[in-house]
Amino acid sequence: MAKKKTKKGKSKEETKPEENKAEEEINFKEEIKPDEDIESKKEIKPKEDIESEAGFFTKFWSKPGSKKIIIIGGIVLLLMVLAIVFNLNRADKSNSAVITNLNGEEVSTEELDKRYEFFFFLVGYPEEYKQIVTKESFVDQLINEKLLLQEAAKKNIIITDKEVDAEIDNLVKQSPVSYEELEEQLKENDFSMDYLTEYYKNQMILTKLLDTTVFLEMDVTEPEISEYYNENKELYFAEEGQIRARHILVETEEEAEDIKRELDNGRDFAELAEEKSIGPSGPNGGELGFFEKGQMVQGFEEMAFSLKVNEISEPVKTDFGWHIIQRGEDTISLNEARESIEEVLLIEKQRQALDDYV
Image (cartoon, rainbow, N blue to C red; front, side, top):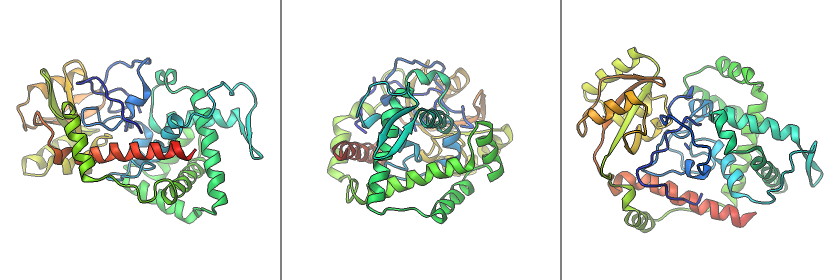
């Protein structure tokens, strides 16, 4: 995805889904601004709020450490890329029962409606975000996804039911919920396990198609990473009035107290965040980047700004759960930033490749 710089010092802490909750959970921004650019919310940037991919999707399907565009933060990123990158026809086609016919395959308003609601279910965007991520924007996304799936079929790219089941089994094992709880969540939102499985299977097919064609042998070099860091140093240094912090979010005070004891006994904060945090920033070591007063909910903000550099807080409660916060250094080194920069540059390259491909 092409990276658009956000205004310095602005952390994207909306209750979103960019990047997790059971999950209205961790997006600490207290108000949603419908007129903001949705693309800026999906960027992976060191100074942005890493808590961007909240909601059901983040809780159940995040895959820490993954680098490919299709599975960075989960399969939903592909959906977002398709929705934003492809621009076939912006006309409002969603008023007729059949939106279009693609080589004999119809795209109906019923299918569009269901996919649109499923997206919000997966990522946990609040209703206000429907002013930003409109149903019309999903027309092109759905069309292009079907065209790519047709291309995959021509190339005889398949994913077996066994492969899908194994992947979902693995994801559920990594999540804090059981199959029964997952099925109940789906049922409560008028979806089914079959629908989720079919959706995920299609995303796996698209991943395989793009990995063997568009993204083949695509990588980011060390000189490119260094150049990006040097050209965007304002992203890696705190401005006046800003601090940097990371946190671990859990549901109960008891869990928070247990984690605090582990930290007091020498456990690594980032390691525990990856292992224990229910927030989308967990896979990133709990990193939240830089922010200033007024950007976080009050209890979290007061505690974070009261800490000294590297100091770890006692558990603090907000509406999102129980947090343990550590204040960070006022700079982010190249070594610390390397992974996120690599993701930014890889997404930029992949977005351009996708744009050229279609």
